[in-house]
Image (cartoon, rainbow, N blue to C red; front, top):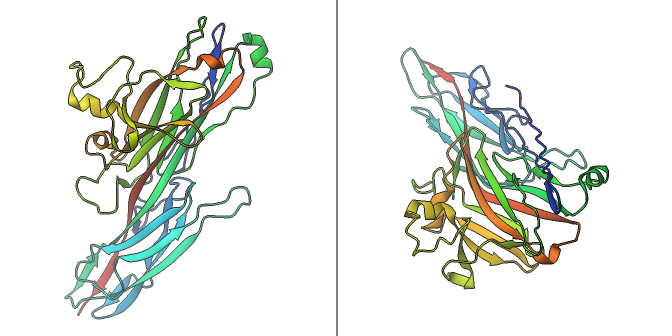
Amino acid sequence: MEGTDALIILLIIGTGFYLYSNDYFSGLALPGASGGPLEGAATGSEYPGLLIKRFQPDQDTLRNGESTEFNLVVENTGGAKAENINAEFFRAGGLEIGSVNPAVLGSLLQPDESTGTPGQQREYAWKVTAPSVTGSVGYNPGVRIAYDYSSEGWSDLLATKKEQAKVEASMPSLRSGSTKAPVTVSVITPNALLYEGAAGSTVNIRVDVVNGASGIVYSEQGFGASDMNKIASLTIKVPSKYLKLDADVGNEVTGGSKTYWCCAKDCTDANTAFDPEMKKELSWVRSTDPDGNIILKKEASDAFIGASLELRRGLQKSFVCPFKVDQDAVGLEQIIPVQASSSYTYAIEAARQIVVVGS
């Protein structure tokens, strides 16, 4: 299966005070069986993140009591460091495993595109001994790799009062993109309103999170039922010098931050127009970092907000938060960086057939 990339550029123009966005979406092909007896593996171009390059025995046919080694090679092909890597040999059936299982593989650095350095690899081997069987018996053991990973997305906005023709002639370079990862985070600004006098326009910042690869996401490596199909955290960061929250409502929580409701109107607990499930989707914990950026964060560990972080394989979730362009930015041409990031545990699998021939 070939990997695909989609490049989408969005340019929004009006009259008066303008905001422009330039958004890049990285398409992810869904890896399936690679053909032959090795199942569930994919090439690095198809599956950025931790890649199972090899899961193969020295011998794929054994006799009663005979031993072989099952060899594993994994490589980090994504855009972040893979940490807390664990490899479990499972579905062994009657095969006897004589090595440490699960194996702790540590961490692997991502590729360095500036130098052309590939991502780090790690090898491990399980000693496997065949049982005593009659006739010929096939087994289909697998390997499950779990690791901690992170994804980032970003998009610059240009705020200006220039006429359209002048802007097109002198358009500055705007950064936009996403890191390569099994879970893709994209920052999108589909709408931008104009300044009208001293009032700031509303800008809807949208963050899309997609589990576009073939694995399962967990909020932590405990692999409990409540952790499955849920990312650990999602964060949006915008500079408070140019953008302000469109509302300031919520309840005090630990650390003096507040729960912020991402909606166009006041949606406090007293507002019965929003049911509890809707409030989970809308609510974020708000804070400010040392550089003065506005931070909106959801964490799976929060019993209430965390319910909105569910992300099943092959699905996308979108979160939209409105901001006001700060009145102090009127008349200035500024590039406004918007960033989003997510952390999670990711689990992938591969399988390989082996046959035991008895008497």
